[in-house]
Length: 276
Image (cartoon, rainbow, N blue to C red):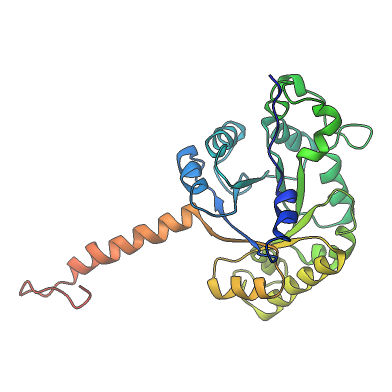
């Protein structure tokens, strides 16, 4: 039975231009749990990022999460652990349509990321569509000829070298968007843990401006609401504003503060502490 693949993140970004330019808001999915991924998929957010660089995700768990998310009105992007043609081939064959490639620091690395998603003669992706979920085991008509239409490539700008080269990276054919990672960027600037530092913000803003000038979308990671608003006002087209594991960590800490720590500080006479 013929099967049609869904639209890509590139398509979703293009469609937003018809909605007064509203940026796409998303969150990280880092737990490795298909259940949590499905829960997040129904949240109403525009997109999810399933992370395999800093999270306990392998091919099997990424596949399970793709299956759990499928059918919900949300875009899903996956970040592989490394910009490597073999790894990217495996992720694409799983059915990943939207890639966020980490640590792209130069034109050559951006070109390599794109080449990994293209079949010869335009790239180096190995041909295995008959065996792969990507083509739904050859149920997607003309998949080999149309594969490029079903894949979007976003490259991550997260070093001083990448910021210096961002204008040229944006010119690479097949790079659909850039995504700025302030944490690693701050570290590369000698400002480890200082994502809010003015120099880091200035570097992010430089990348956003470069993307706008190049006519390509740009996104950024920003959990701090004030920082997120700042980057949205500066022209970010898409943004990540939270993570499943962070929400669970902070939420469980809040419960402990309310019901454990508060009980431990209850006055000796049995009265309720002031926090109640």
